[in-house]
Length: 151
Image 1 (cartoon, one colour):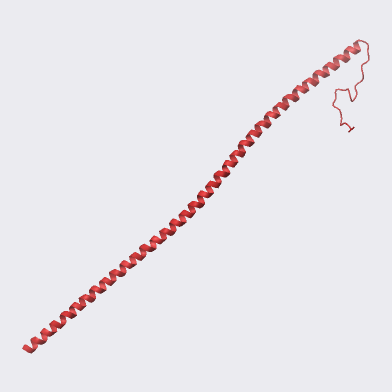
Image 2 (cartoon, helix red, strand yellow):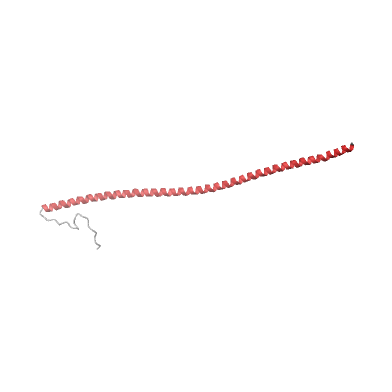
């Protein structure tokens, strides 16, 4: 039996390294899987980080474009408001001038009517005095003169 127990002992001694080798192989395989999973997760995080960088850059570009457009619109709005204020001032000035001219025209028309009444009264006085008044003519009549010829 000693031969059989030696063989069994040798098999047991030879099987232990095989078992240890199997366990080492199994541990290495598990570690390799975990390393691959970790590398994959790290690659996914890196890709997400790159996407967020791209998104941040796109956001900054869009923000810059928006702010520039907003600035230009604000400048244009200021110009329009300035022009509006100038037009309002011009309109008020034109209305004031128009009112002044209308008032002056009314005063001149009133003066013309008063002068016409004076002329009529003076003619009546001349006729009453027995004198013959000068007939109405283009140069002395109550009507406006036609276009004058250039001299």
